[in-house]
Image 1: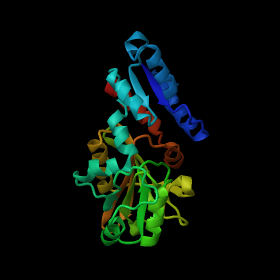
Image 2: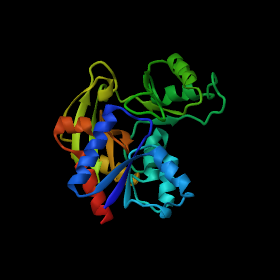
Image 3: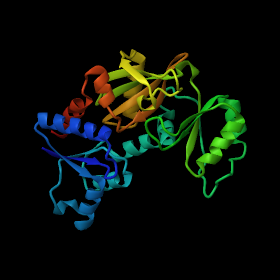
Image 4: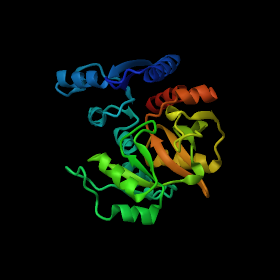
Amino acid sequence: MKGWLVVNEFVKSDKFRELFEMLGAAAEKECIELEGISNADVWNKLALNGYDLKKTDRPDFVLFWDKDIKLAYELEREGLRLFNRAQAIADCDDKSLTYLKLKSSGIKQPHTFISPKKFHADGLLPEGLIKSAGDRLGFPLVLKECLGSFGAQVYLVDTPEALEKKIIETGERPYILQEYIAASKGRDTRLQVVGNEVVAAMKRYNENDFRANITNGGSMEAFEPSVEMKEMALEACHVLQLDFAGVDILFGADGPVLCEVNSNAHFKNLYDCTGINAAEYIIRHIKSSIC
């Protein structure tokens, strides 16, 4: 069996390299030939073959570890099975789409406002938004740019004046406003889902930031999630049609609250924390799905 591991041409950090090496080693254990190939090289293959991969060696599957959504859709049009699928990646990449997809599922999420689409709107504010957000969400509240990773572009906003300033700073970039889950300040959980199973989990905590992300200086420890947390993570992945994901869950005052779903979650920290190698679960899931 042969697969492509599609990665981004312009991401060269050790953090990503370690992750890809773990996936490659897991594939080798399962006697799978996993070829690392950049999104730029795949686009080139498509162009050279007249956007018809039937003219070249086709992989049996694609492990798509990138957010080049247009490429993912094109590979699916070529008949290739992607892990994760293009639409699932797109829905997770945009926090507003994640919220909307899960809104009718019964999964508890923070109360959320979605920014209106803006064109050439630097310095302009949506009429009534700040008052509506304050009345519904209260202060402090959380502003998240819709596209962002590792806790970046996520801000805790304390006052209407600070919110107005931050919205102006976002320019035309889309964002969401969310209720601040104060009971979970500086702590959350990451559940790694593969297939229909929660394979590992850790608790993250940070005494110096409202965000718990390790990248922002947080710490981690192995964690046994509650049945309710596991059910929430599995249902979110089912609704979003994900083969695997990292699901972040907050500690709400009245029970767990879903924070985010990451279709291409980094699992090296999880491995360091728990000793559980999510790469092996992912590769076995792919193998069982293809065979």
